[in-house]
Each structure stands twice: as C-alpha cells, then as structure tokens.
Image (cartoon, rainbow, N blue to C red; front, side, top):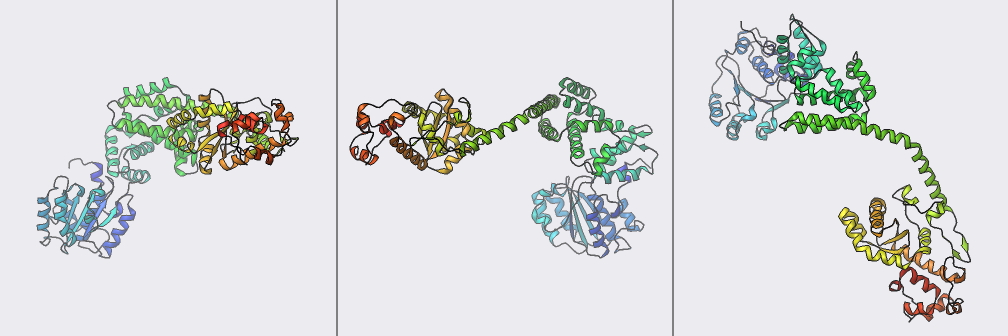
Length: 606
C-alpha cells in the first residue's frame, strides 16, 4: 500500500478521538444516542481542528447498523462503506470549487430521492462561506424544510461570511484552537507506535508552530521524522519551520539588555545568512517575551515552572529583565511585526527594531538611575515646600499703623526671586489667595500693567497656536495687576479659572514670560474676589498716613492738608471730579490707585 501522511492515517474515527473539542463531542454523542438529530449543523473554527472529521463520524453514526449509538462501530458494512467512500448516500462537496447556483440547484433536486443503501443522506459542504449569494439563496429553502431522510453538515473557517438566514437554520458548533498540551499528548500517543524518537522540546516547538491546528502539527511531525535520521531534535524542527535557534534568541535578548547594537546586528546577519525568516524571528521574540512576562508575573503557574525548569540561560536572563521593559519591548515587537508584513525588505525593519530595542534598555536604565539618585532629594524638597506653604498661609500678617505689610512669596520663603514660585512647586491645584494678591499690589505699577495690556492680544494668539483649548479658557480673563515679577488674572467664571490654573498654568505662564522678556509668576482670582481685594487695599491706603507708607514718595503740602479727611468726606468732594483732576489735587489714595491701575481704570464715586 502507498505511504499515507500521518494526519490521514491518524484521522479520528470516533468522536472520542477528536482532540480538544470535548464541549462539542459530548453534545453530539448525547444527540446520537437519544436519536435527537437536527436537520442541519454548522461547524465553524480554525483549520485542522476536526470539523470535517466530526462530520464524517456523524455520517457513519446515523447510518450505522447498530444505531442509535453514540459512536459508529466501524465494523458494519455501512460504516466501512462510508469510510472508503463506496456509499453514495454520503456526499462531500467542496464549496470552494462548487460555489455556483447550478451546483446547489442540483443538490436541491437530488434531496427529494430516498437514500439507496443507508438510512440518511448526509451532505457535507466544506468551506461553505465560499458559496455565492445566489447559491445561498438556492440552498435556503431546502435547508429550512429538508426531507426527513436528509442531514446537512456545513463546515467553515469564516462563519461571518455566511448569511444570518443560513446560520439561523442550523445548529452551530464552534470548534476552538487545540491547546499545545493536547497536541503534544496526541503526538506522543502516535509516536508510541513508531520507531523514531522525538525530543520533548521538539514536540513543544511543533505544537507552537502549528498555531492550534492538529493537522498542521501532524504534518510538521511527519516532515521532521523524514528529515531526521534516528531521532527528531529541536534543531531538526528549527530547520523545517525556518525559525532561529534558542541560543540565537537568547543572544539577541542579551544584546538588547546590554544596549549592544553591534552584537544585535551580528545576530541578525547570522540569521539572514542561515536563510531564516525575519517574520518568524519577530514572532519567536514575541513568544519569548511572553514567556519572560509569565515567569515574572506568575512564577507559580505550571507553565512558568515548566518553562524555567532546566533552562539556566532563561533563568539568568529572567533575573535581568524588568516588567516595564518587557511591556515596552512587546509594543515595539507588535509595531514592527505589522510593518514587516507589507514591507518589500523586511530584514531592514528587523535591523531597525534591533537598534531601537537596544536603545530602549539604555534609556530605561538611565532614567531609572536618575530617578534613584534624585529620589531622596525630590522627596525632601516636596516636604520642605509643603511645610513652607503651610507656614506662609497660617502666619499672621504684620500690621504697622493699620497698614498690612505683605511680603512677596519669594521673600517670605527667604529666597531671591526665583523662576518658579512655591505655588507651582506644590501642585497645579494651588490658588493665589487674597492676601498674596495684596502683597502683589504693594509692588504693582501702572507701567507694568499697561505693558501687559498692550501685549495681551499677542499673548492670546501665541497661546492659541500652541493649544486652542487653553486659548478658549484664557478669553474669559483679563490682567488686573502687574509688577516686575508677578501679575494677576481676574476670571468671570470659576470653572475657567480652575482649568487655566490646573492644566494650562505652565503653558500660559511660559508664553507671557517669553513675550514680556522676563520671568513672571501668574496668580488667578475671580472678578468678585478681585473687587474685594481692591476695595480692602484702598481702604488700608486711606487709613495709613502717607508719611508712614513704606517705599513711597513724600506727599505734597496739598496732600498733607487732606490727610485727615475721612473717606466719606473725600468721596463727596470728588464725586464730580475726574480721576485726572483728583490726581492733580494730590489725594494719596487716588494717587496710589492711579499708579497701579492707570487713570482709565480708576473711577471715584460718592
């Protein structure tokens, strides 16, 4: 007899022989034994998982002379006839080559006739998704109400291409990929009857390369047995499937960990010289990375224990790798795998991956070292800043003759004017309180505010170019106070103020500092709070004699004459006087207000 491939010799003859599909075989065996058969079945799943084999077993079981039985006897004339193809009542059709309307109409005409030598006519239509729309329509009516002596079994690897009207008329069974453990057990069972030995690692590699298909696994095993002399080894399997050796994989990972680009590229050059497939190499690296992740994240799993058992090189590399690096490496592997699928020169992308992967470890290591060296210093600075902020907010303001002497935040902490204020050192959620704004008012000048107003249109345009959302929030505010190192923005809406302060502080502060030519610190307030701060400050200025105000000019004689005037009397006198006229009269309060806000913003009311 001519030689037959292993997958043909060891094709399942009983439902119990179908590997890895217990959820399906149990249902079918119970239905056969109880004689509760459907008129149509749909078997879907990946290639090589037992769909067609299960269909032929059902055809034998329903026509077995011992029926109803859960398994065919394979001894009666009918079972043997179906097995060797001499029974014409079991028709197997390849829909890939018989996908037209005429072929389906022929089936529709033949189902009317009773079976000639069996109890049921069984139509097995393989790759049914290849039928045309017209063919599906021709099959629809027959599939819905077939004669009692007809059973349809449809098999497909792409069930999403089948019309829902067909699927709804069938009992559907989804075959799943066969696990590596189940395939290895089946191959060991087959090899027990042979004369050729196989290394366990070789079987594991065959199971992984077959991607869940038992037929593919047996085909690779058959090829490996033919290639080997007396025993199938890992190297034999690697030569057949075009994969890199385990040592080459380890050398590559070690080069990436060391950041040695030259060593990694030498590995790729050796890979290409040996005629290996770059796509297969990337895929093997993905599985190796997955093994490292499993061993690091779940070392107690049986799979992890089996992977590390006896593999000293794997264990040494596992001690060096970190999960964060493995995650980053997996992302790059996935990216380059997609790029290589459609590339004309995949080896170039493989070399590019090696270069980036080697730099990935170097960058991660440098970042880790920097973080470790500065961790204690950063924590100490955070605690110090938080403590200073707490003390600054809780400390009472010194009062001199009714005037609040507020120190700018930089001076209160004891530092020279810095580029970043204490508020930023804590978090973006810090808010400029009213007392701090009063401190800014002491140093505010009209010239600084006017300069900020003149540049405001350019500021908003620059912010818009960098971030449209930040520009939108910024449109709700206006600058109200500005000094040499600080300024205050007043907002109408609290939500807008919060968004600017929390998310866009660095952006806006940087743009304003750049355009104004000096480092400026931003404070934010609501307009209502700003009005309160302004009113309180003006009241304090009225109460404080001008001679005792720190850092201010000596008032003129005309101003001295009005120093004892009460605020209410002063307001009455200036009810009909413009700010400029009031300034000419020398009122120290209005003079101070005009100095800070400018005459166009000052209005004296009764």
